Structures are given as C-alpha cells and as structure tokens.
Image (tube, rainbow, N blue to C red; front, top):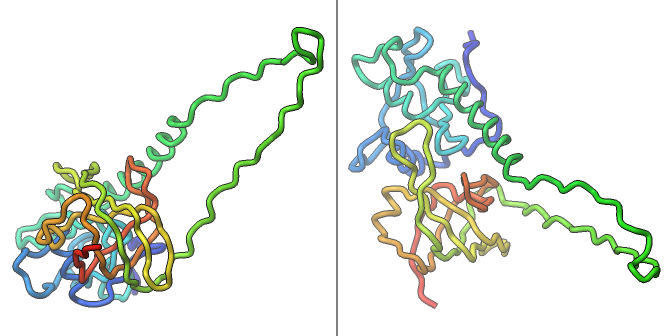
Length: 250
C-alpha cells in the first residue's frame, strides 16, 4: 500500500555513501558533530510512526527520505528533526508538512516575482525623424543579436575540482531564525574532464570550518556539481558536499 501524501522529488542528489550522509546530517543538525555514523530515523507525520532512511537532498532545505513502502518523500530537515523527539506531537509541532510545502511553493513564486521586478521597464518607443536636422537621411541602425553563453554539460558523477575562495557570506533561511552560511568560489574548474565553470558556491559546513579557509585560498576537492543558483547572488552552480578538500600552493 502506497502513501497518498508522499511528495515525490524530481531531480535530486542521492548520497553515495554513509560518510556523505553523515556530513549532511551534521549540517542539518540531525546528529551531533561528534557522531561517527548516522542514526535510525522515524517518520511520524500523517498519523504514522514508521522507520525511514535519508537517501539524498533536493537542496539545502529539502531532504529526501525513503519510507517503509519504498516511496521517496520530500521533507524539511527541521520537521524531520522534530519527529525524532520522544514527546513529538503532530498538533504541537512547529512545522506542519503542508505548511512547509506551501512555503516552499510561495518562495518559488516570490522568486519569479522578484526576478520580474528586477528587470528594468522598457522605455516607450519614440518615433524618430526620417532625416537628421540638416535634411540628410538618418543612418540605418545595425541590429546586433546578443548570444547567450552555452549551458555547461555537467558530469552526473563525482569529479575532482579546483577553485579559489572568493567570499564568505550568508543567505536567508525561511525556516530558521539564523541565516545559512555559504562560501562563494571563483576560478572554478573541473580537472577531469577539463571544464571551466567560473563561479560556484557551497554550504559553509562544520566540516569545512575545520579547515579554517580564508579568502584567496586555492583548494582541490571531490564533489558533485549541479546547476543551482545562489539566492540573491549571480552564482549559477552549487558544489554538493565537497570531500577530501586540500589547500594547494601555486
């Protein structure tokens, strides 16, 4: 029997191993920083109390879990964290699943509105005289078509990359009282196959903080890279769960 409430993910990043899962659980606050392995999780929404597995993520605010039926379901990490409490009550929970979905959808709609609002209004066209002030015909204007930069074909598997730390910043998190810490990189490139990416971003996780990175540091690492724009920044690609990160000198 399948659950009718399940929110099937579209494209999402599946964790390759337990180490990758553990790092993300630490980032979400689902396990302690000292944890050496992921614990068992339970889904307690919709009058259920069943074991579930965290198998991936859609984005930093949306986890993907596998229910006891084998169905995949999208859930906010904070909501899943509340479910693990022994005294969890659906009625008293700070997050409701419908509320989370509504807020995510509202956020997407707001992003579209914001994008439209950011575009300057087109000035009304004014008829130009056929000739100049001295009676000569006005020169014809050449139309130059602006070509869009080709979209990168990103590998689906993990790759080794190189980048330079450009900036440490924060972005709003609608589901938390604190903003999310992120790192923006420049001169980003995939080493094999050789692909120039330009700029990208990643979460500034507890694991990365231990490296004490600074602006200007050149680093190499292994990760999956996906097309995901950073909120309020012109950075189009996201580095998911960078591992084996090392500082290099040139």
